[in-house]
Image (tube, rainbow over all chains, first blue to last red; front, side):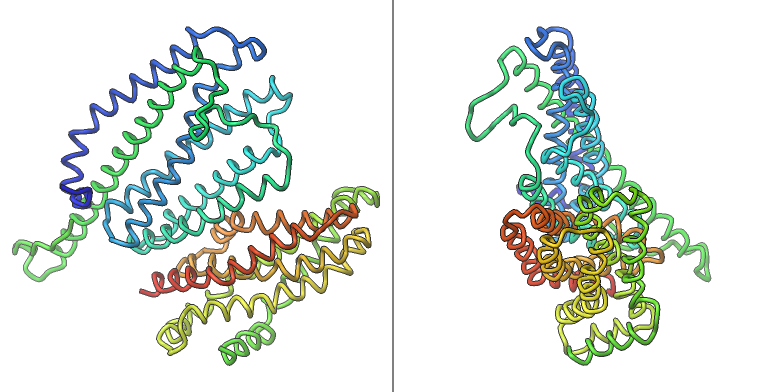
Length: 259
Length: 218
């Protein structure tokens, strides 16, 4: 038993097919609980009024936007080191999900910022670094789209992901130097264990965060499965074309060891 | 390495197009900006450091897709890859050649163009020094972007998308140093940080560039 057995696409397909329905239902339940509880059954904040409730979308999506990149980084490393195709495809599958999470975080932040800060956008370090993360996602996806050879695309995007991670981190701390922050501190500090959010808001937030995490995993599994199927389809078509061009068309095509 | 550098420089100067194009773009940008924002010298002085840095960055971007593209098309890159010189050294040399043909002229041109934009005299040392120290990073990062997109038919636009976010920290520190210089503040910290970025990218990115080239040539 090791994690590497899921590097076999067939094994991955079997396990993910078994995992996906349960995971999806669980994700839907958690997100629904978190959002409905958060939106309708929590009191309005003393100062922020009902606008505080956007936290149930904003914080989980921001969390997943960063973790999606982290997951892509790990998957890229696995691809570069051990060359498991599932890993490369999972990284490819995660990028658009991460991009959407980034957009949700930016959009909800802007909607919340208008009544609270009096502006949709400020060049605050946190906001700026998220915008840069957004650009990194765009570049990564564009590179995947642009290269036709799948293995080369996987290689190059992995290298881009590694270099991009370094520069994204660099930008994150560079912007701190550049401008003063308007954004409040983190709502869920893991390291210090102290929370700035009261329990009545925090419990639905936890549901929402767990739900977004599960949603991300479910979406990535689903998209990876789609990618694997599309690879298989391409392999089948290529085999068929090879069979057509052969001199004797009724001989069965030789079984090539495609995954 | 030196032979390759001389070849690249000779090609850039004699074959036309690449060399000077970035410089001309930089010049035109700096002339256009006053028309865009108005001739008020106070406003111009305020935005001059940023304009000069963004202009240098965009001018750098213009010539990036030429770094490997021509060599890739006529097969020189394959020969370079099989040559005894390691591909990492090729990447460094290419970046150096790009810097000499783009970064260096931009740095030299920044001082007169700064006058055009009414840049305060106090900001001049920080700006020129910053460009001299920061443009190598732009060239090295750009070479990496060019290596990623070398096999593509229309890589030019994609390079911008890939490279611009990577340019962010350099631009930030460089423009900040010039702005601080204009306000008469200490400029050492941003300059040092930017030099750190330049040195680190110069030391590490050629390996990523060479890896990307190998993947593209496979």
